[in-house]
Amino acid sequence: MSRIGKKPVIIPEGVTVNIDGSLIMVNGPKGNLSQKLPADLKVELEENQILVTNKFQGKKSARAMHGSLRMILANMIQGVTAGFTKTLKIIGTGYRVKLEGNKLVFSLGFSHPVEIEAPEGIQFEVDGNDVFKVNGIDKVLVGQIAAKIRGFRPPEPYKGKGIRYQDETPRRKAGKAGKAGAGAGGGIAK
Image 1 (cartoon, rainbow, N blue to C red):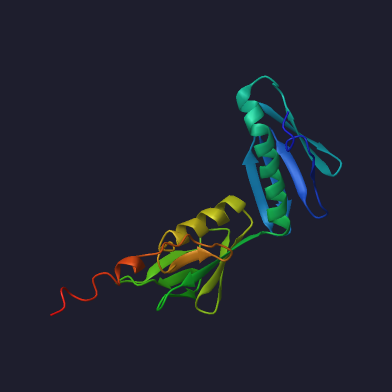
Image 2: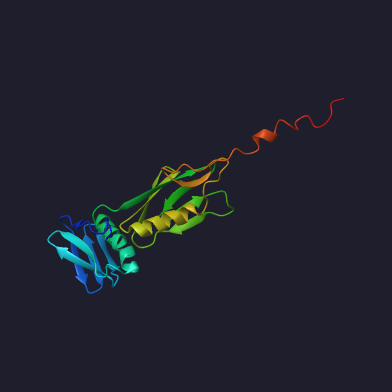
């Protein structure tokens, strides 16, 4: 039995959870989310908590999804109450971002500006011209949009220029520093 899966998910005040067949719906102050439930797992509501139980203890796919479904439900509740945020930072000379309506416009050293429009459920915030945030109630969608933006110009290993997460430390390489002194003379001295 999953150690994570058997822990109950607490439902805070102001959040309502409804189970309609194989669909669970969570409504809260920030919005509403829904998730299709797997057939091998059973979800029960008791007072102010959600319990996920495994119908078939011996089935491998049910055991694999037990803890995952519990965390998905916990993330849904956290999303409709507090939301999720990913903060990204742009490093590099001339690299910047600006917000135009619900669209981010990046200047990343290409011959054209790179634009990304916020899908439904996502909001962008820009702090200065090099830090921006991706906000939303769906943890998966926030992570996907942040990863897509980071993919426009991932941090390069020599100078670290590019788009990175706020707390990310990219791997750095040494470069060709060892070769610079060997051939500097240009040949044999006369």
